Amino acid sequence: MKHSKRFLDIVRAVKARVKETDVPTVRARQKKGDTFYLVDVREDNEWDQGHLPGAIHLGKGVIERDIEGVIPEPDAEIILYCGGGYRSALAAENLARMGYTNVVSMDGGFRGWNEAGFPIEHDD
Image (tube, rainbow, N blue to C red; front, side, top):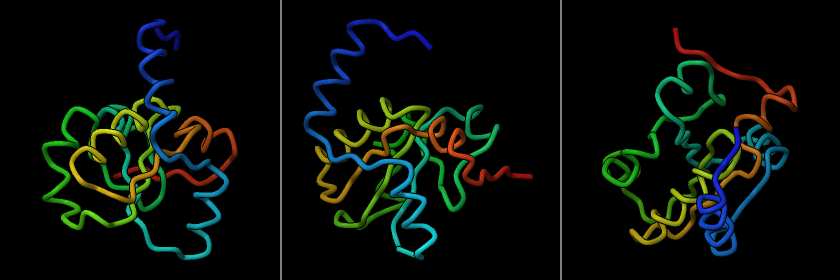
């Protein structure tokens, strides 16, 4: 997908402020059994096409509205992902503004996860 310059400018500025991790690190942490919330911020139709094992779905359009009902602990470790790492960075910044102190965006997103050959789940 080709992104507009203005959108990319916003994302670059946000990525300089939020914490990020990468696909191999998240997969290694899953395999190790680490405890954290893994949140997919993609659109409903993207989620329906497959998602990371153990993920919960809070689309970027509703995450700020719904996060406290799903993850009420402001110090909980939350790893957000989207298609490539842009929307998750934007969502991470907003959650930090809401007082969540341990939010990380996964650079590479679902695309990077899939390209690495890591497992994908589908809801039946």
